[in-house]
Length: 455
Ligand code: SF4
Ligand code: SF4
Image 1: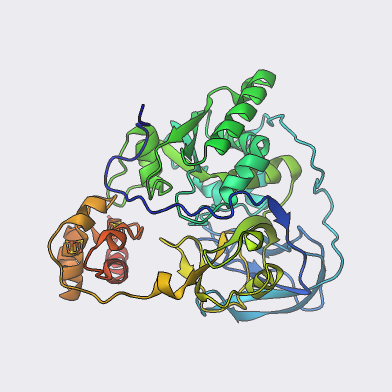
Image 2: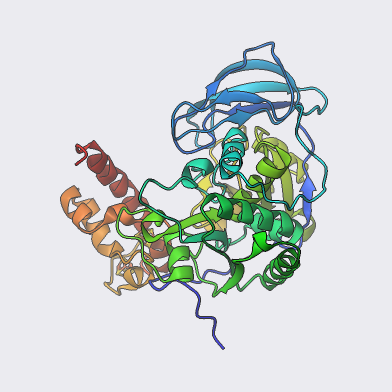
């Protein structure tokens, strides 16, 4: 019988190319120097609280939040602070970084690094939330929104659903898959902790059905935890029919609850809070182990890499991407482009000397044949882009309005709702660069919307 659980509008079916899915997570060695970005999260960059010459331990606070939407940053290593100042990020933009020379691997007091599983859920929700905040946990599914803010619904709004995103719908990426196989119980404890903070809503862990092993392992671990404690009641694992972009927040909410988030609306408007599985693991480590978010898992992959050079690495934040590429055998000659993230929504890496951040998920090597732009043809009005758009937009029309610079009509036609998923581009037989044009037009319209006085 066909799996009914998926989102209702649009979507596409790219080959999933999970080439590194059978590669267990390996611990990446430490480099000689790390460069820790102050802009590891959505919102205001953090303010450094260390200076050159300071000795730091791993897990020690090195920067504090600079506003309500901001987050703590901790040292990923022990060593000596060498400098604090601007340095180029992935895209080549200058961002404040703290440079630390690595010396040994000494962790700050009070952090439990033992592998022992801690399943008891603390009684005090405020304590759980405070740990999530003080450990600098942010969303690791792409947006890097501070998690403690997302777990604090505004007055008058209640979470009816906590949805844990295990979809990992982007082709090639396998880090979420591997942690679901290798750290399933920790993830489930993380889910129970967030469920407690939100007042015990229904909790659904959504996993696409191209990952049957992850569905089986998570289900088995859940049953065993449910036998042990009532804290795990009301949690379920749901198999979702594979379709891109299932991991988009609005699409996942639709797939799990059948509810639609309105234009410019938030998940909590329909009673949902969505957290990624890697974030959920970080919540476990923060609350049960007092371990700040200084590690994550990243996939090194691409069709031009042989099987033995595909990897999933447990990395520390601040490690230069070039160091990771070297550990994995160097950048392959056939690589024409390196992407951070998946091929559909990831960002091209303009600077391999940039460093990992909390939300880093991959080094994806694409070949010339995979990235070469095909000559663009005229729009044949086939409507495939509109059929594929998961936000119900008309990409061919948005492109025409963007070419004409008509921001009013662009707003009337909801360009601001574009989630930049690339489904339109993927489905266009005329190879029109719809996403590039629509993304710029969306930026222009969002600036206009934000400049209006609030009602
Ligand atoms: S990139 Fe935007 S316009 Fe294109 S399919 Fe996705 S949501 Fe629709
Ligand atoms: S898919 Fe391409 S060719 Fe077809 S309507 Fe959309 S823009 Fe035009």
